[in-house]
Length: 323
Image (cartoon, rainbow, N blue to C red; front, side, top):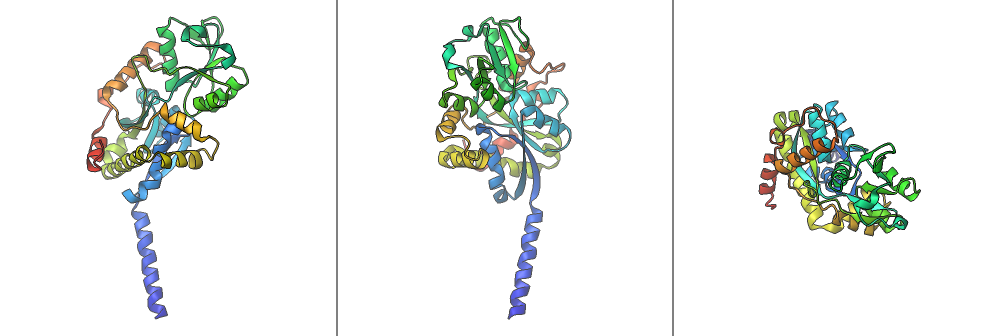
């Protein structure tokens, strides 16, 4: 009897090992931001989709693009401007979905009493270079007739810093204002060292869309895996939209290790809700604004119609009865 049980156990172990080996590995590049949380959650639901997702966190979207160019990733989550710059710079990618919208806020030191963009004249404004926040800042400044540069002499002096460093610089009064992402902008406001000036969605871009991209090789040559990944993306996003408590717990505990409060998370997601949608029109408008403001310095701006592909998204949403 013992021998029979041992044989059954051994066979079960082999079967389990075979099942694990059958799960295709998909390499995902992501950022540590609240509205990127549903993308991170894909790896939790991936086994149900028959895949295994290995996630690597990067400091900014342009770093994700560099990893794609180096052949280190199959899928990447970035803001739209990084995807556009990456495509212009030779990254072999297609944009397949949007996973969040908004996610930017102009915040100033409360004691300065800045209530409008016009009052930024003569101020030092921090932003992350190459981020969608820089595109929005340039568009907002241009709309109000303000010039800018990293050196003194223009209406606004730009200070380029990473997302975490922007908050520290505002807290330390090294900058006067910042165009910041989430949840960092909500943190600054909730902790009292920042005050909202505006959400910069009154430019032609509107609410910027965060973009999920795949390598062309993954999209074209590993279609079954790409389809499974997209179903996982829709399932993860639907979970975060329909079950906000699950989203908050995962983002606050698994991603930020309880370094952000419930208020930080709630405020951040109100300004950067999870979504699915992506259109060539939105990507083209964003590209045009980047060209106009000089962000990305693209010699050959890509045409959105050539690389935005939403067929996998539409099929996955139909399959899962998601609107």
